[in-house]
Amino acid sequence: MRTALAIGGSSALTAVIGAQPGAGVKGEGYSFDVPQGPENPNAFPERQHAWAQDLKTDPFGNGVLPNHQLILFLNYKGGSTPTGKERKEVEAAFRTLELAFQRLSGGDSAGDNEGLVFMVGYSRSYFDRFEQDLPNAVDFLRPEEVLRRTDDDPDKADNYDAVTLLSSATVSVLLGSEEALFGELDTLNGVSVRGSLEGIFEKAERRTAFVGKGLPRDNLVEDPDVPLTDEETDEITDEHVKESLREEAPLSMGYKSGFKDNLATEDAATITTGPFKEGTTFQVSKLELDLGKWYENDRQRRDELMFSHEHSPSDIGDIGEKLEDDSGISEEIVDDLEKTAENRGRVGHAAKTAGARNEDFEPLILRRSEGVNNSLVHPKEGKVGFNFSAVMEDIEDFVKTRQAMNASHLDNHIGEGGHGILPYMEVTNRATFLLPPRKHRSLPLPLPNE
Image (cartoon, rainbow, N blue to C red; front, top):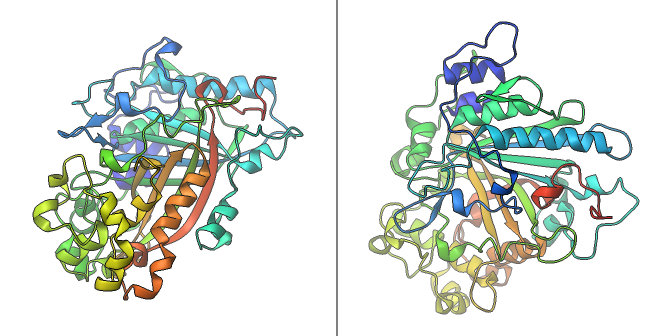
């Protein structure tokens, strides 16, 4: 499935579904076997990032992210500023997706994330075309500034005009949605396709990724998909990865993530004032993970580097399942970080990032999508790409979290490879966006209510 999603297009959709389009009508004959979405627009939250009510949850109440993600980076093709006609066309295209598929589990927390959720955001470069400035209530940083302040290379900034992130456990839902958005289908899951991004946006870049229990092992070292082209499917051959990447791991570094205690709430991630009230800010990154180097560490050291020196395998379990809904990071662990670094020469990733929590020891950012990028980097060396995106009330919250992860004040005490997961990752791309509320998601004005 990961190969089909990575390739995209009608051939991939046909291969996944196992159906042929009907003659003369684009996309007729595709059967998705996923419930349609509600017809009432009021059934959808104004917050594009409000997924919690539709996410599958695990036995401990943690949200389980959909297995597959598709990120489309877009550039506006029109004149100096978008027109009202274009705005209506784009909104009709997004509305088609809502009608065609239920939102993930359809409100059944024990169900699968077989339906769809998506979010649409806009960058500073998009808003630069308008004479009006964004309101003071929205002050999200350009990606170059974020990179400078997190000690990364500003040249790694992406400045696309817009982004659409789509998530589902069903690959065909993502492929069909993409085809519909760009005018390649007349019907989508029994719904007439209205509106299109074609001619208004150009698709500048496309990223796909997967996450979920057992998927990293299956897709990286055991049974990669049969490719839909003549190219051979990449496979990790690094012996450290093949030996140590656990069967049930949902992520390539071996542990689950998204414990309730280390994610901001949707309320905390929401803009509370101004014309973009109920919206949020959004950062989208691509990383390179050196799994070969990571798995040179033994299990105990990996546990300590991912969490803290106070975590043991008996606390964590195979993939973090014994932690249930709490990462086990306390204020005492955070307060003792410098002493830990001096005494042990290494500190944990979760312990460092918890240093950016608020005065009530609550996290500042809410991850909304993550996964192994389907375009593997250097498989023989055990290097893979990784997509990471998160929402927060202000991009400044992400900067604070990443600065806490860097913990540069501990550098003099840290031995080689001991700075949490930091030595095993490199930022290759970073972008920042404003996610408007749903009513302003289609080619918004800087002051949409005026």
